[in-house]
Length: 310
Image (cartoon, rainbow, N blue to C red; front, side, top):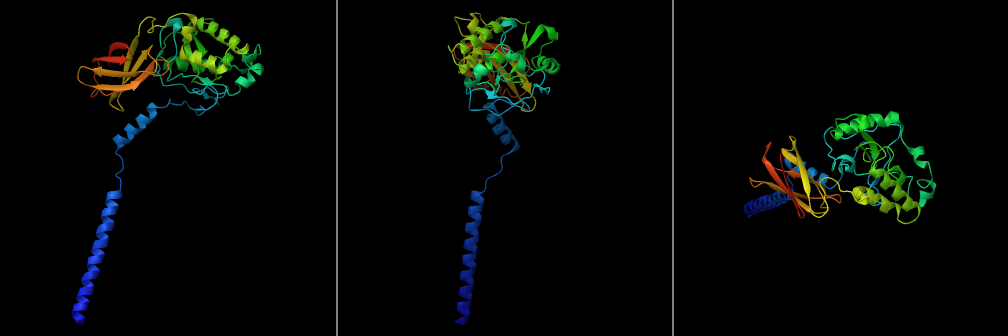
């Protein structure tokens, strides 16, 4: 009997230990999560990047105040600000009706200017001269900004323009608010800026409304038509740039179809979609199966359709 009890006890102990270990091991393995691959991580990062603008060095984080869609700036007037990389920006339209690339130059605001301070700031004659950055700083930035936009003319052929003008509370020296506008000053945009400032100071519209109208499409306020967006019909244009890092294309679509789904496709069954912003602009990550220069592609955005090549 003692021998049997010892054997039974030993067998029970072995059974319990084996059972316990098996349960623990199974739970641990089923609960463990495999780390994402490098490719999966890159995909997740790119999807997240789709939903925010890339911030320039020294730029302030997006603020919930003000217009609700533009950030306030902390960029110094006394420091030459870094600009987007050469060739990475694409103006909307041409000539005097050009507008900046909303990825590179979405606009930014001066935190000293708000609806509550307009009578002490923008509505005071000569106030903008007190906040304008020195030419010794802006000339260097202007040359780098022209390279970013692929402009090959002389500096004198462009105005280093505050997209949201100083007289409407635009950031003074932030690369998100400055770009090489074709043509010398004064130009059609200057007249729009002056009129909007007067309306703000007269209480006809709010500061936020004026800022939004400039950024959305100042050309519409002149009765003129920007290239690529004609009245009476939907239109779009596209350009493409290959990314060897991600083995796909950035397809830049410019249209007069804001807040619409845009789909880029080719004759080989590849198709990718994104959506246009309030200015009718979109950057679609198009996976064409690798580098395919010269391949025909088509973009459909809202009621517009346009074609081009990779």
